Amino acid sequence: MPSIVEIRNNLQRRAIILEPAIREKGFVDPSWSWFGKVDLCLPGETWPMHHDEPLSPLMQINLTKFPFRPPHLSDVELIAVFINEVDLPASDEANGNGWCLRAYPSLSKLVPLVEPDSLESDIKAFPLKPAIIEVDFPCHEDVDIDLPEELDDNYADHFKTVEGHKLGGWPFLIQSEIYWAPWNKHPAKPEYVFQIDSCEKGLWQWGDSGVGYFGRGTEPGHENVWTLSWQCF
Image (cartoon, rainbow, N blue to C red; front, side, top):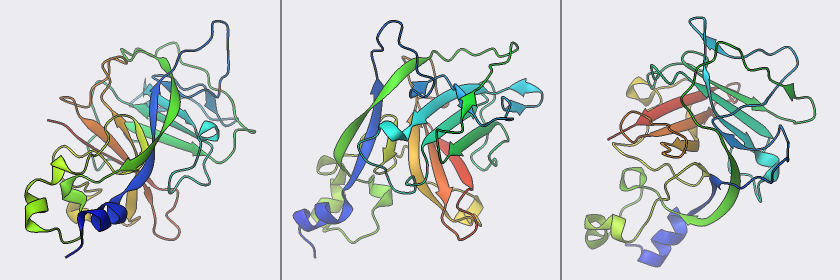
């Protein structure tokens, strides 16, 4: 049976947390990372809609400002996430149906995204900055190795899963492991990439203090398929 040190070395991952940032007065950079705001798109792209209503901007993430790139994001420079904040999409809804994630390989081709006049959102915008988490551990549900009985009974006392807006690392689970589709049989075989937490400062909730998880396809030919699942208390 492996020792606690061996288990820690086997399970630990690096991650990046996005924290509130203080922006200098008068500073304007449309590529900045934001909660509750999206400023950029490709030429010809328009604001994402759902049933003729604009989706709310949830987060813009500039990965070129990161000290390292988490797994599955080596070819992405900016991510934009939009959500239907009035009627949250089900966890098996495809990208574009009640939520929208756009991943851009380069900042150089992006242009300002025009916010529609009809947008009504309660989400409060504020800038974000990255911070490194050197050690992040999975929740008990995500552990796929045998644990000693005494450790299995009090796992959470020894291994902490970091909460918050997080890229890489492990998902902070509330109910169970993530199921990307019924019976976990999604054709793209997505894997967890990042999470967006409920946020009191941003006036945002996934249900009752929940977390939204975003995955990316790993099956050849499906690498640009993004998935959303969320859990709450």
